[in-house]
Length: 439
Figure 1 (cartoon, rainbow, N blue to C red):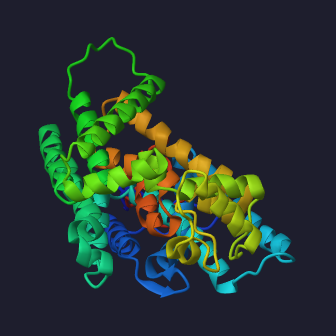
Figure 2: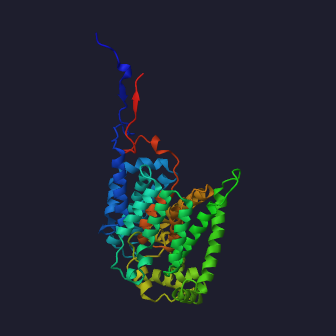
Figure 3: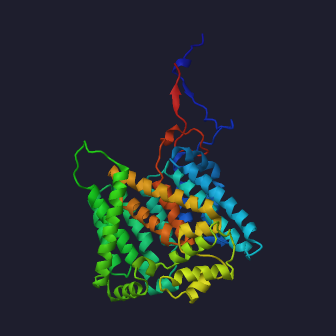
């Protein structure tokens, strides 16, 4: 007689179905982690294929079915993706609109669109990577990728290897390691060391970023009463005040020669020329404002400025006593393209009003997340450094050189709202299907 022992047999749950009804592929955790590490390094390494297309960006786009379902786990992630897609459509339309009065470069247009697609796909992939790796591990591998991509052959590297070569990569790598070790005092010590290095390498902005990071890490280490409210808005207001204080303190230190004679002389010249350290160091801001007044709707992807546009921009720059008739303005900013040396300005010029709104979405996502983490005393040194640097890039950094860092910043700072275990629609998931026993 056959015994009936089916009650003791394990019943394997079939793989979860996607919304389309197909079974989702379930990869072992080690495979997921390997995919995450390899692609993170490739994105950070920035191996160029052609026209601004990189190996890392292609990998992230190819893995779209993997990371797209994860976006619903993060606050603002789908809005970020939608804003980028709308911006691309707007940029193409603006290029056609500007065609009667402006020349356009197909290669430049393709490169600009490819850069934004790479940003969207890269951020989506980092968000997925957070479901299989810790934030510290992501920062470490990304920092390693940037370090591998340092080029000793560039002229800027020869002038200052730390500032134009290893600074960003090693800062992310070292602060990522301290986050992995989970020792606040070690985070503070390493951040202090990097701040000192910045003072010795003629890096004004890096010194400011690191000093602000040090102060915020130290502030989070203070003892507080458990009953005290945790307000992100209050934290952001405090950050704003602290930022102004740090700016004025650093300016005073520079003028006193604390950061070296070369930095002192350069700062004095900028103050005497424009009356402002910000405008003196970034006169492109006045060109951006002048062009926004001249042509508020933007120009389009790949669109080259005409003589009237260049005249308007130079007039704005001349209003702060800056001489715009130089090779930097004629060749870098307006040499067959428009480069305004800020993510906000570049997005507006290439994608119009939707591009400007998309840039504001990015800024809000970054600032909001910093406020939430600081209020909860959970902001690590690496997240603070990345967030502060990203906010600076939004106003004073070109999109092309800032995009690699922006992928990591947004990928780590966008706030998670749903635990990854609840997502059954992934093509590659962080765990194998559960096994249950029959009754």
